[in-house]
Length: 457
Image 1: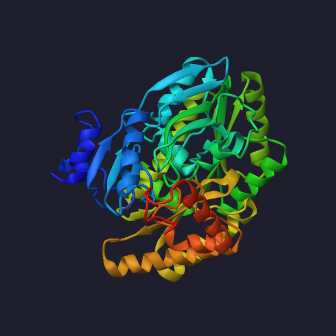
Image 2: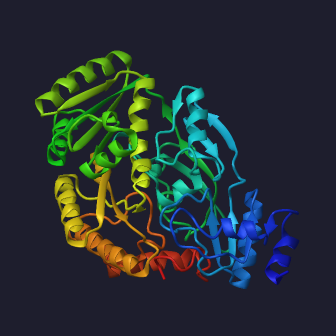
């Protein structure tokens, strides 16, 4: 056995350190295609375990790659320089749901959907809702500042992190923030950890803000003749003074794939589909649904499906989830990109995607969060494992990301940078901002052992 394995085994309880082939393989990859094995896997079960690992790693300058559920889409937790894969998946307890304080206290390995369910049992709500909420963990959500469809109304993860316990690269324990919903004491280091992608510290506990759960919700699914008409409806809805909890839009390519996968009758006619969700009191939701339905007809909706209660809403959301399965069913590799543009640029983005498709011969599927401009612009590639095809697809991504940046957008809205978007981070941030990032990194991780090989290298 290696010295690293022996040393860590001496520091930690039996069974928490592994070099088993299966454990190394599982911890070598996330949902992206990059893979690199760690030298050893540590299954932390407490803050004290993490402190021991970090003090050892810092002293011996061993890379540490923190990992939660491993469902990221950008290679963010892939241990490209070997070292220690530090799993917090077994730190999965919900320690407290306190409606009096409006907080949930959880460990980082807790599945996001479990937090929502626990809060809901008490009539309360944890709004962040990434598509993978049934399998992603709170620690990973914090690392990427995860979003989801309902962030239009409720915001993303960072709006719900009141406090975190963080173990630094040198093994110090920082208690940042707390249980107060207002706190202006010093720098906002709590929010600094949101989106830090495992490069500034290891979160071992989080205090989440929870809010009273809406009494009910309702949805409308409206088809339009084309994407431009649906995008115009998005802005018209917001201009009318309505703030939906979610506004999702889908393009013609995705709809064609869905009809092929689910059947022609699964979706109404039209080359664009808009999903509008509202929530609140029962009476107000019913009135607002009726008003919105009439408004969408005025805006040119071809057909409108109404979902007036929770069960009916789930049917429309299942259709939204089925879009991803429909794209997989094409047999093409989906390069799942989460670009963001100013909302006024939605039509321009999709028009550019069509042009990119024509110029490169690579199909492009666009769907996602219309309300905040976060449109998943997915390149659908045949035989991505072929080197020539991969180069062509990567060049197409380069064109896409540069177009997005040139039009005031961002290269990632939810998934993070990781390895997948490392190539574009320099242009996305600019030189002075990159140096500011490096200065913060050096202050908190002077030996550069936390998640090395990613976008700051």
